[in-house]
Amino acid sequence: MDPRFTLQFIAKKDGQLLREALQEWRISKRAVTAIKFDGGLLTVNGVEHNVRYILQLGDCVEVTFPPEKKSDGLAVEHGDLTIVYEDEAILIVEKPAHQNTIPSREHPTGSIANLVCGHFQQQGLASTAHIVTRLDHDTSGLLCIAKHAYIHHLTGLAQRSREISRKYEAIVHGHIEHDSQSIIAPIGRKKTSIIEREVRADGQYAQTDVTVLKRFFLNSEPMTYIRLQLHTGRTHQIRVHMAYLGHPLVGDDLYGGSRHFIDRQALHCVSLEIAHPLTNEPLQFTSMLPDDMLRLVKLSCL
Image 1 (cartoon, rainbow, N blue to C red):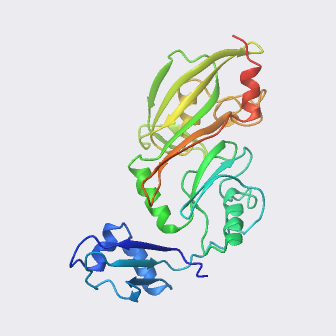
Image 2 (image 1 turned 30 degrees about the horizontal axis):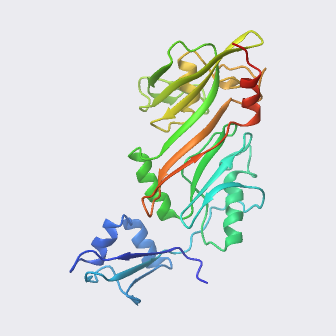
Image 3 (image 1 turned 45 degrees about the horizontal axis):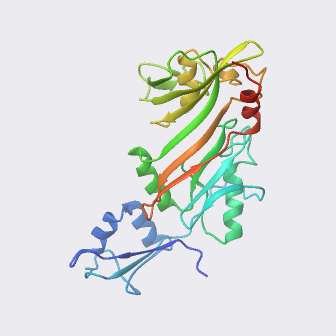
């Protein structure tokens, strides 16, 4: 069985160059070059052709992408993945807290990406892990992985046009005054740190919507249980915006939160909505609040 990723398209125009059709199918020039030189294949009605071939209405075009190679620093590992959804194009998994999405210098192994590579190897896929929606090491919840570079390209286009929706739930210090609000404040790297971000005038546009679910006290400490929707995907966006608002996440000691109640930032991705990159079918996935965060809410008092 050919492990290469293959897609079929039907020509919708008479007399169109194959090259032009590939562009309409959002196959980039770089991908076409890789197909030509790195082991891919273009066929029309089962016969190999180059991009100058003139299509006829109804022709069946098959695009076989070259096999992918993972980076040398991404080790193949086998372990437990909590898979919420999987098909030929995308993989939705639930990431626990205290696990990296991708390897880092501090955590070179055991990441979601390492395990996904092992999962793909078991399936016989000539692919690597393409992370679409990344979560911080201590953030839990849903994330999306593309099973091929072309799918990653399509989901990247969807992200840039804000067609992928993510909702989070968090517990923050203090009682937030307004039941709902939108934080629009640019985020950039803090000059004194390679890790921290901050709201700064020369940062990138960032928008986070905040809705209060519950205000409560825990051991006389005021806290607010909130739902958040991201309109942009800046690094540490929710953590930075909530600290900027004066309500850092409980457990987020990098941005002013206390770890007295929980040993990580109390942040969980509860919802992920995406149009399927190949069929455009709307997909929605949800995730329950994890036990460590649920415990704080259940222990609360008004």
